[in-house]
Structures are given as structure tokens and as C-alpha cells.
Image (cartoon, rainbow, N blue to C red; front, side, top):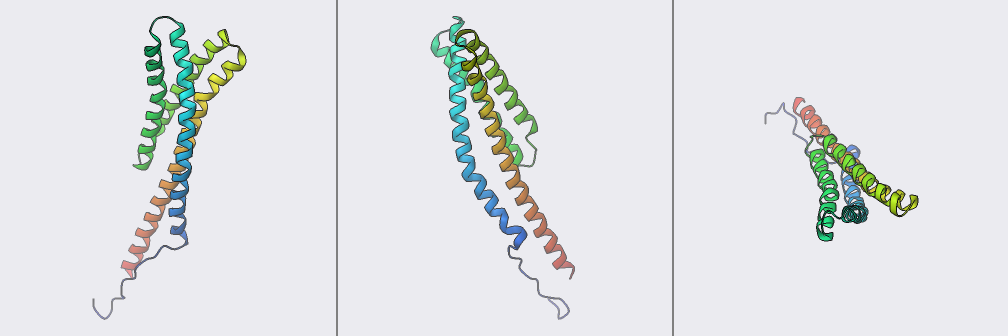
Length: 168
């Protein structure tokens, strides 16, 4: 370094960066609870689909549970894929849209059977549970997107400050 160059300063986390870690940690604590509740709603949804499939008489009860599980577990897989897409900067819009679609299909199928056999109240519950799971997965994704965006924003600011320091 020549006598004309200013020493390079090390950046510490300023106010713009300090919230980033708290957003990420806040997101991770609520993500666990969101996932637990979404899983419970999904399990109840699986039961409704299994009842519907078993009632058709076209398959055995274990097979009905397997088919119902595949449909509702697809919602979880899609939600996790959406989360991965968000954290890697790919958006996750297609994945979360497919999760909503699968949830709506699951809820509608289960609710239609419940409406015919157990009444409107049971049908509303059967429709609501998979939609609740999709909503929770979606809200968890929104939280993840906010945390990821905050981290990216912090890294962008860091690069900007480093570039400004290099100019001086």
C-alpha cells in the first residue's frame, strides 16, 4: 500500500444488516411450528381421502390410505420444493401453485364424499383442512422469501460498501 492509499476498512454489521439475522432466526422458529400444524392438517386430509377411496370399494383399505397419502404428501413435497426454489433464487411460484392445486383437489374430493355421507359440516372441515395446510405452507414460504431477500439485500449492501471503499 502506498502512502496515498487509505487503509481498507472492515465493514461491521450496521443497522441495515443487523435485522437480517433476526429475520432468518425468527423465520426458522415459526417455520417449525408452521410445518407441524401443516403436517397435522395434511394427516387429517389423508384420512378423508382414504375414506373416500375405500368407500368406492375399488381397492383395499391399506391401498386407499396409500393413495390418499401420496396425493397429500405431494403437497408437502411441492411446498418443500418451493422453499428450495426461493432460497436458491428461482422463485418457487410454480411449485406453490401446484401445492395449492393439489390441496384444492384433495379437499374437494374429500368434501364431496363427506357431503353425501356425513353432512355439510363434515364436508366443510374436509375442504378446509387441506386448504389450511396449503395456506400454512404458503405463509412459511413467504417468511422464507422475506428472510432470503433480507440476506440478499444485506449482501448487496455489503458489496456496494466494499466497492465504495475500493474507489476511495
